[in-house]
Length: 137
Image 1 (cartoon, helix red, strand yellow):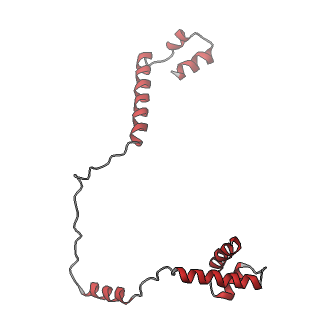
Image 2 (tube, one colour):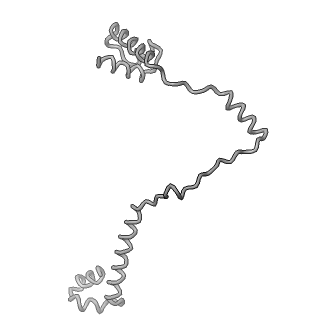
Image 3 (cartoon, one colour):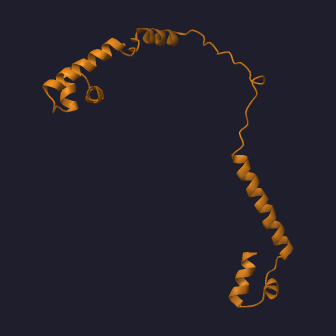
């Protein structure tokens, strides 16, 4: 349709005479445009639809146990030999860190987080965290 209007404006003719310069019937162009618009709307709507499975339909999958082999035994031994990850420090240790930072800051009020961390054996980011809490008190 816009091509027909472009021909009309370029040649400075009426819309009816511009239709004669186009080899596809106008009705066919209108149908094509209508179908394209409907398909665009449907495609946009489908993007936002989420299909959820009902809980009754979901199947429970049992994990498959690998057969023991020499490789698995070696891997198991390596995994068992690893140390468990450290748990977060208890509240008493956290309070102790806060007190240590407060005391250091009282003696060195202009110390940077890097200096405080180095002096107290903690990272600069941890020292910065405790410095902020100490200043807030």
